[in-house]
Length: 195
Length: 195
DNA sequence: GTCTATACCGAGATAGAC
DNA sequence: GTCTATCTCGGTATAGAC
Image 1 (cartoon, protein in one colour):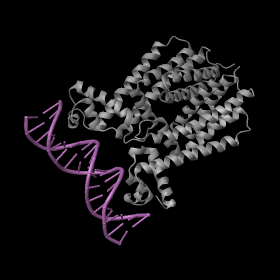
Image 2 (cartoon, rainbow over the protein chains, first blue to last red):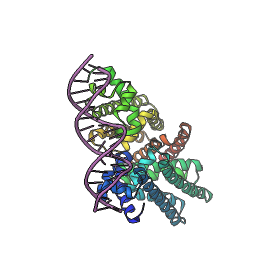
Image 3 (tube, each protein chain N blue to C red):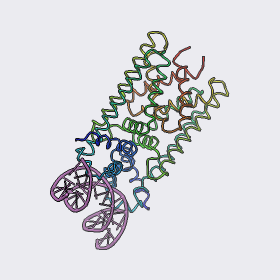
Image 4 (cartoon, rainbow over the protein chains, first blue to last red):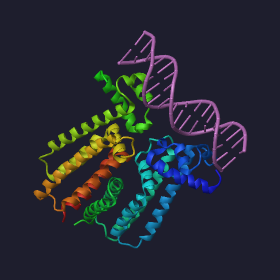
């Protein structure tokens, strides 16, 4: 629990392993090897495997929430359509970093399957943060008349769009993903505007 | 590899375990216990853990494709809107069986992370089957004038809707899910009809 | 076909020298 | 802080009696 630099090195090495193979699927031997030290040396910096993992989760999630805040602030003056589209794209861009994205995907889609609930709370918090941001944008959009449909409908449809595009982020190549997202978005916005 | 009845019993016991905890997360001891026999007895029916798992995957996937065919056939004479909505709902209903749904979810969302590619091929095949069905419906819908927007747009948006709703199937309670899906669908269909 | 006993391995974690 | 050596546990899989 000392030497900050080494802790960071270990977490950085552990991230892609946990993201790709999950908690149980990743061994301390693999992590140590990736760092370039021996397995028992890890215990000079972390109390247990779970300790390592949980610390990493916390960092990843607080980073994500910071990113979210910063982006929303930056897009504050755009039109409603642009704000919503940017939120969708920014989210994808951030999570397109494979390690981060896979980690989020894994622990948002398979909650309650793990030992400790503290694992999931981190991601639920991040999800809440995103939803709150969305609600703000939609409310303002309705107020100024950019959105005609009922607020609840917009929220539900948008979240579905976001979840779906998040999944597809990993199926398809980057160019194919962009094309698909553009198409899905245009249908969505078409449906939002009302006639 | 004999006594068909016992093989089925074992697979039936293994399904919820693999679905909830994954391949590595499930032990043969757990499976044996759930069946009511001892661990080594499993080897009278399967060559290995992988053998058991793969056989189960194959069965699950062929069942799913049969279900898909049957449903599409049944809805053949409905209007385009109803066909698309039913496909969405039927898919959800089928996968709402938690064991099946979780298994699909796990192995469709985390492909290429496993030992053997044969695992994933099963699910990719199932996914293809669904896409082909969708394309047929949309093509016919365009032909008879129920759909105005470009075919590709409809496909992309629909798949995004389906993926998103599939994800949400596990987040929310049944009633909340229904409500959300209804909202997302109405925005989607709104966007499809054109103005 | 099912059992007990066991081989073998790799996991997480600890002790203690340096 | 890092290492070697070691402990304990639970995993897959096999041998061989019944």
